[in-house]
Every structure is written in structure tokens, then in C-alpha cells.
Image (cartoon, rainbow, N blue to C red):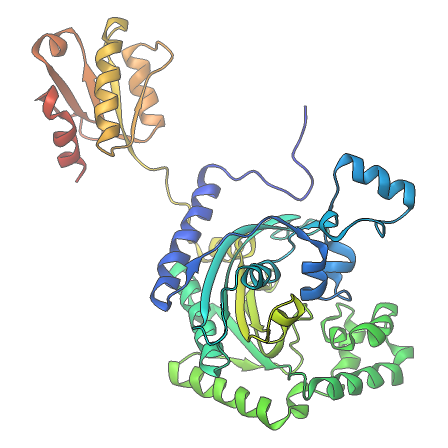
Length: 438
């Protein structure tokens, strides 16, 4: 028997309803802000992610799933690398959503010169080859938003407000959420700050892990994210971003905080927050679920004003966030929130004997065409067994059709809770069922 791949899960039943519900809540929450849905391919050229996420990140270096056809895989094995492949042949499964959306914006000219900003949201599976654990899968799901073309700090604040509204709409107590924010500077001030951190790591190289020593040359800011406790202790004394911002970045950051204060959004400044992807500039933010530290971050994002250029477009500011479905589900379970809910109720149409099958078929068809969720027997069960099946389908009403009903062109509607029964004309069945359901 074939089993699912390690680090994946089958979405069905309550779990699938929860994912659908999360998407519905996202649509309802994002709509007042003018966000439209987008879906990008699950596969992109590798360069899309290398340009956007950064070649030095763990996502690109260690976790990105590469995609080859059988013939191309033979060529790669024979050559010992994929260097001989054309860019369009070098593909990867998307490990996150922003780079693909920005690529789509460049390719389809979503933000023309002088055009209005574009606001997009997505709900898609992502793929990363990391060690599977609770709430962290190799195929996971994210809901995210991307706002392209808006440099105003109000856009930063509104993205954070939307994110916190989304959690509240899902059913998470705001008091159980910790919002951390920081500014990482921009192209004007970040290089000098990056060099300061690099030099700090080199000065303390004998105290740092091998990976952090490597990061000093590739992306020193990632050392703030090191999982090694001693490295974190050392980095606590490193130069901090907010102390090295240029005047323009400092002003932008202060305005973001003023907008958050005005909106009543509680936050804590974390000068070590850098997020894990290279494309971030200026504002970054992350949300943790505090009652259970093991759950950790359940979402975050930031500004990425240089990403459109890296993907081949003209300079265009951008900001967004992403929320992990699997992580949020852990928080919702801890909150006692059943996002998937119970199986939807239905109407069950039962025939008292096999000869009633044509009448059952007609009644079922009429109810479904009226938009009523309807089930029936397709296995030749007895009437008693059909009633049991109706209970399994969570039927609130059962329409019973026997010889007397067929002769009188009627149907009997049975309330599955009270067992009350009423006879109605067959041509009024859909309307009468709809009334009782309402």
C-alpha cells in the first residue's frame, strides 16, 4: 500500500472545512481593504526565489524542492549539476508566496507607471524540505496578502491591522497574541549596519557556531535568528538596527508606530527581529501565540521595497504578510475554537422499497436544483438502514416516498429530531423543505 509522502497530510472532513473556513474569513476580512484574490503556479523558475528570497537563506540553500522531468534528471545526474540547463528548465516548488506574486506583477504589469497600487491575497500550499514536526510540514498552507506600489507608512500599519483583525475573526483572543515589530532599514543605511554586524560576529567568532561564522560572510543579520542559545546570548550585545537607521527610515518607522497607536494595536519593539528572508526592508513584524510558546510564530511579514527590481521590474514598493494554516490551527485548538465546525446538515430522501427509486431520484434532483444539500440511498438499503444512514449524514429532515405517496403525488417530510411528519404535494416539495429548513 502506498502512503502519503513524509511531511504531508490529507485534508478532508473537519480539517478540510477548517481550511475552507479560513479562506472564507480571509476573503471577508480583506475585502473592505480592497484586496483581490490571486493564484500563482506551484512551480516557478528557481531564479524567482533566488532573486527574491535570497541565495543565502536556509529556504533556498536547504529547503527548496527542485523539480525535474525524468529526462532532465538523467542529464543532471550525468553532468553532476544543473548548470547546463536553461533557466526555464530549472524549476522549484514555491516555498513561500511573495516572490511568485511579485513575479506575476512584473510579468503582467500590475502596477504600470503612474498607476494605482494593487492589493492581492492568496491561499495556497507551499513546499519546504524541512524536518516534519507538529505544525510544520513539507507541504503546508498559507494565507497571505501583498500590497504593491504603496510607500506610505500607513500601508505598513494597515497591513498589521488587517493581520490582527484576521486573527480576531478566526476566533483567537487578541490578549493571547504578541505582536513584535522592527525596522531593518533600506539600501541607504542597511549596508553599513550589515557591515557592523558582520564585524561583530568576526570579533566573537570563537564564541559563535559554525553556521553563524558562515553567515558573517553571506548574510550576517541572519545570526539574530540562530537557534543556538549561546549564539543568541552573544548576539544580544550586537549592534541593533533601530540604532543605525537613516533619517528617512527612522521617520518612516516612527510614523508606522504612531498609526498603530492610533488604531489601538498593542505591539512590542524587538530590535533583533529580522525575519528569515532577504527581501525585507524597513518594517518587519511577527505574531506569536503566547499561551503556548511551543506553537511559536503564527504569522508575520514586512516591507520589501526592492523586490520588484530583483524580479526584473521597475522600482516599486511592496509590503505583505503570510499566515500559516497549520500553525494557526494549533492556536485555535488551544483556544477551544472548532474552526471546521460540524458536518453540514442535509435532507435525506428515502424510498420505502426498490420500486420507489425513480420517484426518489426525481425528488432528490428537485431538491438539489433548489440549492438544498440532499443525500439518498445508492446501495439498495432497507428503510430502517436508510434512516440510520440519514443520521450519519447529519440529516435534519428525511423525505419519505412510498407507494401511497407516489399514488397521491405527495411526499412525507419527517423531522429527524422530533419525528414529526407532514405530507406535502410533490410539486411543492422543494419550497416546503426550504421553509422548514429556514
